[in-house]
Image (cartoon, rainbow, N blue to C red; front, side, top):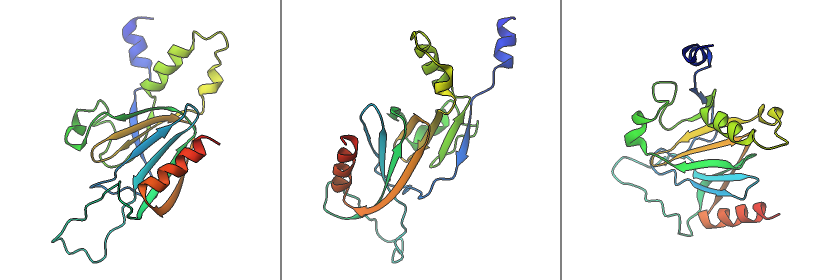
Length: 177
């Protein structure tokens, strides 16, 4: 088969927006990532509109303060992740922009080239098993100033009203138990 035919028959990578509850704050989600080689945890500020807000002031978020915020803790059953990458001012330069990727949204990347790359790397292992990859999904979350991507089989979201520091301590306990 000619190279062109192989490229043409290969499924194309694209992003599919998925429902994500609770949604993150679009202005200052303050995402934080923790990983230990078995699981990956993500903390973010939940979008909770201030009913008293009249547009004349800005609420500053300080993740080092003792202020209790509405926070989400996401536990992914996977440990391969990327974080940072780009902010909302350059989203249109992302390879999947125009192929389903949307700003401030959660996605599953279908026909993920990143998963294909990881499979290719792992194929040299003498006990490589293609079946171990069948449930892996490539999640991509586009925040205001960061992008978070993870390869995982699933995730679970919990919500808290606590400080960033207290929730980070809870994550450390979970990673080490």
